Amino acid sequence: MTDRKMWKSGLSIGQLSEAALERAAAAGLDLVEIGGIDDVANWEKVPEWEKKTGVKVWSFHLPFRWWGDRWADPTATDPERWQQTLDWDVPLIEGCGKAGIKHIVIHPSREPFKDEERETYMQVAIEHLTILSDICKKNGCILCLEDLPRTCLGRDGDEMLRFIEAIPDARVCFDVNHLLRDTHVDFVKKVGKYIVTTHISDYDFIDEKHWFPLQGEINWRELQSALELADYKGPFLYETMPMGFTWADVKKNHNMLKNL
Image (cartoon, rainbow, N blue to C red; front, top):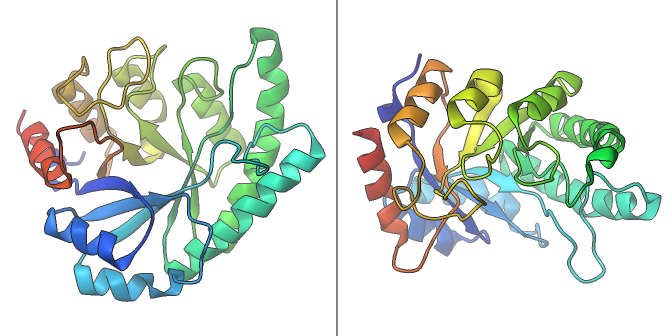
């Protein structure tokens, strides 16, 4: 069993730069998640920037939609679209390996899916995510599958557990504002031992909102207790920035949650 007061504070910040890590350090953050980067030329500088600022680049979020003529979709049944996904993801994973970024977060699917389509696309997703997990492992990284809302694959603990059982080297990124079927406690009971990172925000239990914690309906004391019982050792990594809040507010908010 872990102690919530030991969990480090983090934030998803988008683009990577030395200036961004300096800003995170000034805000009192311990670590960050980055994503959306195409130019990997500076990734080998990450250890130097981490040492200088004291902020760890904990995770990288792979692309999860199409941008112009580029495509990122683990459920792609079109060979050309799947190849586009590989062409986009593989250099990013390799860049993370060079930078020492260990946690690679990915959306297991797009949406929408009809109920009668789910099994077909689940099989495709397992096949493709296994390939990406193997590539991550070769580069010293862990593929972290994010639970998703609505009709996406991975929308509850049972589907996430199915992914993990089929892809033994993969782990879970627990996005706490994506659950629309399981309660937080039930989800953690099912997959808690596989959770290695988080996306922290609040919502109304109707749809994802990415509100700041304590703005929505999540019972934070109950959720944190469930993670403690599951022996969660990762960070509280915020994926939220509503208007009116700053990076420094993340640390303040996290300290407040720890003391609930």
